[in-house]
Amino acid sequence: MKTDPTKWIATLLLLLTVLSCKERIVQAGEPPMGEDEIQIRQLHTDYVNGWIDNNEGQIMGLLEENARIQPNSLMPIEGKQQINAFWFPKDGSSTKINTFETEILNFQLLDTLAITTHSSLLDWTYKKDTLQFGRVQKGVNTTVYRKQGDGSWKIWRSMWTDIDIKNK
Image (cartoon, rainbow, N blue to C red):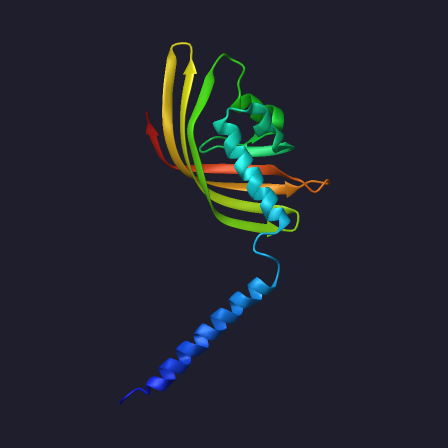
């Protein structure tokens, strides 16, 4: 029994037409990157650059007062004061970020919340007195941003999971 090739061609053309219509609908709506998405992606960039530049004020300024972080395998840390003490302890130690690269894998905007999932490569060195060590971490991070009353965005929640850790 022979299959009529015109049926296959017609089916393929119908499928391509449906797919192209869907794409046209998306393009006819809001621009691919609205103002909120631009702000959030800039906030993400500012966060990464703050770490590279070791800029405590810049990093902490991107967080809501009641922000919560959950580092890999640790209990959540809530509130800017506690996060600041965790990230920037005043004990004479120093942490240098040698490399911090991210790629946003998913972006969702839900009214006054936005969620990003990104991959990361983080290379850092810790030093205190005679103790010194470093790590290279590859991971997946999820960050929830919340729109503020003034229209700006801040980090509300952030958690990360290490997929690979190498001691240096």
